[in-house]
Length: 131
Image 1 (cartoon, rainbow, N blue to C red):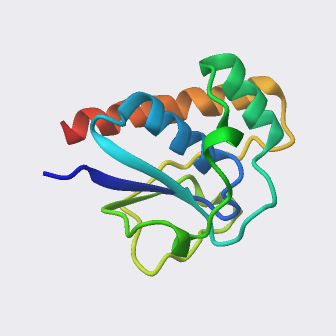
Image 2: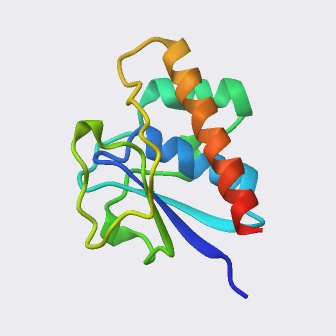
């Protein structure tokens, strides 16, 4: 059986969804395929997220990921919203889950670490649910 495709979606695909894609690949690639996308794109991934992910996990998101639109990724089996506090993106169908995460952009490193740890917990829980 092929692995489920999980899409992590937020409006700009520059921070939370990119972190979720990276952690999904890092922690759960044996169970599901991770993709991130947005309804708009930024020219680069959030540099604080890139730096802190390198410090915490040794993952260089700029080497393996880039900002993508929903049309640029395979049709997901499961679509997860990172949090609709910025405005919920429309992806043509309902989300399977909303993780309700605050966007840490322009906040302290501590806020980034809190958000990254919450995403890690969600990824581990999702992996357990799918095995």
